[in-house]
Length: 204
Image 1 (tube, rainbow, N blue to C red):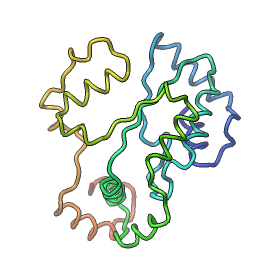
Image 2 (cartoon, rainbow, N blue to C red):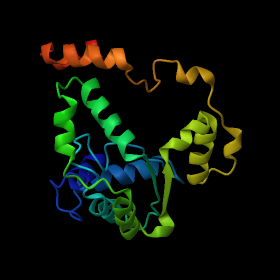
Image 3 (cartoon, helix red, strand yellow):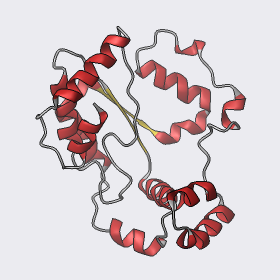
Image 4 (cartoon, helix red, strand yellow):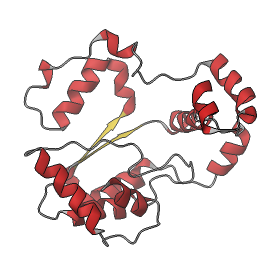
């Protein structure tokens, strides 16, 4: 299912031409959990490449809906300030081991239309305005628990206040850590010296 959508989002599959394997995959997913199913995948509609800024989000969403037309599909999109978004994408490039200097990265980004309005309008046209919700990522500064509860509310959970984020979640191995200044300087110096994916993973 995800692979089919990703190919449409990347422009390598014709929209609406659903593979039998993808339809079977989605139906198995829906059958396994009767009721609502949450699909969360940050690579589903846009990849890390800075020049691929949700260019085909409308086609990808229509493709999702074509897989199972009878299913009700709603979409939640988190957006963030463009400078912060670009910084985050560049940091992910460095974290995965790419030896790319920031001026060259920004040169590649210069021709890209980073309008969230365009993205949201494409999403609304494909899914219907009543089926989308948009939130600024910066609301996470109000606290992890408030962020989680708002997300659960958007998902239709009847009592989101019953859920909270335990403090340990931000300190454990699963925490989504970023690089500080020293980490970035170390990575930018070391990345060109790492030859294999195994080495890059170990260094990260």
